[in-house]
View 1: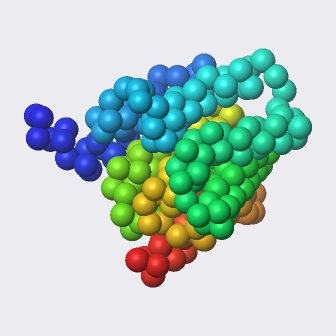
View 2: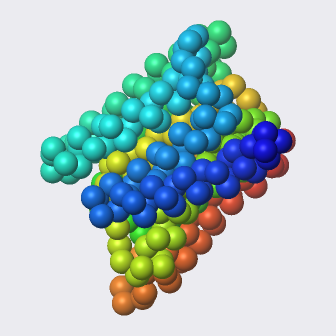
View 3: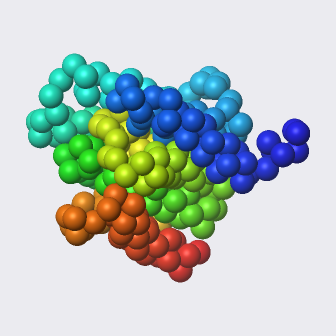
Length: 269
């Protein structure tokens, strides 16, 4: 049994998917189905690193933010009406979070290199978080497709950038997003995503992609390409198409952009 749970495929894929699917089924009736991705990520953290936050490294800061994001998402979804101003504030908070996470590492690099990597992390975080909240959070199918593609793209790109651990976290987000999306495809009904789901997806994926860039070997332009995955998930699909078909098309759009990011990472290696 221990050998099975030590398998990376179980830690980053199978176990997170199972946890995400259970959470989606049980919590959807309470408009909390977006917690599927949180359950998936938490299971991956449990198996890969454990819930230890001292010393507070860059990786642990990302995990902490990933676990705090759904709490903020619940407040945003149920206590406030989503607005563009709120999305812009979240984007600014994302850029500030990037500085908090990576400044100790960037301070040890040459100025030009630190500005390039730090600027990429801040811009990618602000864009991914802000755009996703404005364009995707209100549509469960688009949000699920974006999470699936962004998680898978981040996971594959991070592994190509020589970071298996960050890759597993990205794949766990893809697994949870896939579970959330699968439930909608089976039932033919759109589920509530909101900031609970989309903020968690954006925070975890883009910061682990940035970590793979700053702490490993993922090229900066792959991170920027990954930040465009939410744009792909916002592209139009036939309005009268069934939910499952829209989910497939939107996922393919996202995978196309994520695939470019992975190809760029592969060529850079």
